Length: 242
Image (tube, rainbow, N blue to C red):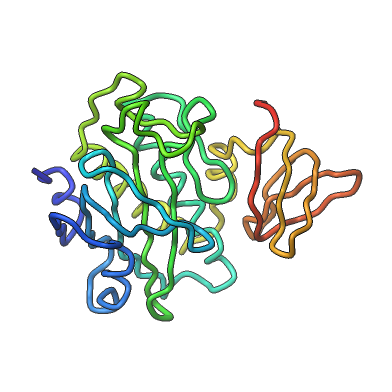
């Protein structure tokens, strides 16, 4: 079933169901090798950013958690990990469903609708687990919110093995690039938030309205709201398409 992915990953574990692939893998991850994968088509207690629940009907989405060994990445660059993960997934999605892009900091959109979310969690100082939830066979009626989409809703019968293999291969390349130096230009090319009018809902409850104009050297989104603000955290709402 996962022959293409297994040619990239040292370990692919497909479980019939679980609460959360990230929750299962984080405690085990220090003993796993780089690009090892735990996945399921039936995740019953998934989590997104800010501990939001992420639930889908069995068989309609693919929950993927990947072990990344990051000990050779300088700590100052590790904030790019969710962004390179989103970039890798956007490229993998685009191979079968064109025009996917990254909404800062960790969503993958197609035609302005979310097809995948990313959640990175630290397992130990040298290990990060990156979880992603990809809407694969979810029908329009099954969408949890009207701003979501899926391969099936776009009329595509996704090849999950190819999707996973493409994602892992590109993710491995981008981790290696991050070890060597900057990934800013690569990520910026895929970040569809840049150029958008946005509202940024900040952790303290405030909101900032302006134009997303760039990513800085740390992966923070730069918003021009009369003066420029570089944000490392916040929920971004696109007000219009660029």
